Amino acid sequence: MLVSVTACTQEKKDNVPLVLSKTKMINSVPFLTQQNNFVYVDKTSLKPISQQKFQSASVFTPTGFAVVENDKDQYAVVDESGKIVLGFSSSQIGLNVVNGLTFYKKDIEYEKKMPVWKWDWNILGGDIKKEQTYHKIEIGIIESQQSLLVVDIPYLEDNYYLNFVSVDENHVFWNEKLYEIKKNRLHKIENNIAELLENKRWLKGSNTEFSMYELNQKKAVHSGLKGSETLSLQFGKETITLNDVNKERYTPEVPKILIDSKTNDAYIFPQYEKVFPKRITKATPSQIDFIKKVSLVYSITNSPYFLLGVFNYDENIWAYDWLYMDIEGNVTDAIGTYNFNVLDQVGNLVWPDRKMILPDQFINKNWKFGKINFYTGMNDSYLIRIEDEKQQRTMGLWNRREKHWEIKPDYYDISVLDTERQIYALQKEQDGLYILFDNKNKKNIGSKAYKSINSDGLVSVKSVSGQMVYYYIDIYSGKEYKD
Image (cartoon, rainbow, N blue to C red; front, side, top):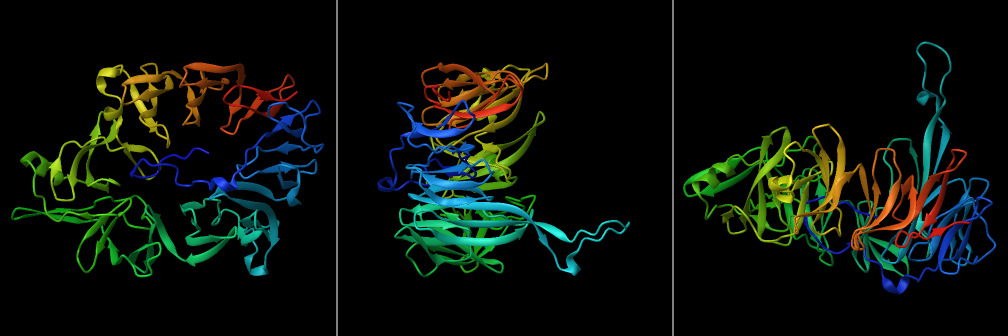
């Protein structure tokens, strides 16, 4: 699964590592037969490993489990031997592997009869709706059969996801709680966590105050932290007050600036890991003028720097100009090669901006730019959307370090399938077919084109009769698993 970077953070290794001793060498893949059902086969010999046939089937997780569907539209989970480990039911099933444990979610929608005071009355007459749509959700662990949650919730209200996060090999975070893993079971050790931070830290909220905790430390590292949208800096005898800093359209659950009520120290989003300087020790007059207009301050994780931004509406492009300040209060126009990204509230890239990634000397003067995307593992490559003078929109993959197009902006869409091995799916025209592309070796993979290609190898094609047919391929070789 690809994960888009969602905060200003130092690039780091995958934060949901698998416990290797609990993973398996998976040799089985779902194979589409001429009878339009799926059997599991050995991926090399294509020989069936069992006689079981399914209406649909997923690839196996690294822990050896897959979701299958029978001809009654019921879902179950099987292991690689074909044994059913979660029985067939009408509930749809999702799987996610974290720390070597396989978490499942069962979800079914149904109509629930409501008490009379919750009936939906039609004021113009007619039918009275006596039912509401609900979801029944169950979340648990396959290996230990531990149930973590069983709940009925109204449709479109709060939902629950398999977004478990590894804190370390013995702890996971989920649903505002911290758990310790013992014998494939989760044991709750902390409640009401407002936000998980890096380096085994988290924030808890109480009324309008927050406290910061660290794993294996019962006492708070910092307490009495209050949200603020104002920062003050001393420069010589002058006090510079920055108002409306990091202001959001919607109030975040955890403010992006937290002030210690005792020391007046300020801790800044995203990791709140260091104190923002109270005094500017070194800056030029032009830098001081810039700082007085700052509206965005982020802490650059795993570095001594803070990012200072001033909004600049330049030629119909919403962007920022930047300065940097270290923990000693020294201001500078540029910093070293710290690999981090800043995204806005909806996940669009803010820093580095387009001009830092793709300098003006490399662009067509008639180009306009849309969203820029970056995924963990892409290093210095960015997906850039372009609109030319004819209002034709295309995408390309630009290498910021080498300053060249890894994939020229000649495609309507580019899908990222594997960042480490640089496997992409390319769509030349809108509503066109996708082809597999190996960017590392600069060559197409296989000779087929598909209506869609997923990172797990699931593809779709349109049959002669016009129906969509789904089956699996090996995205690294193009090998198709079907008759």
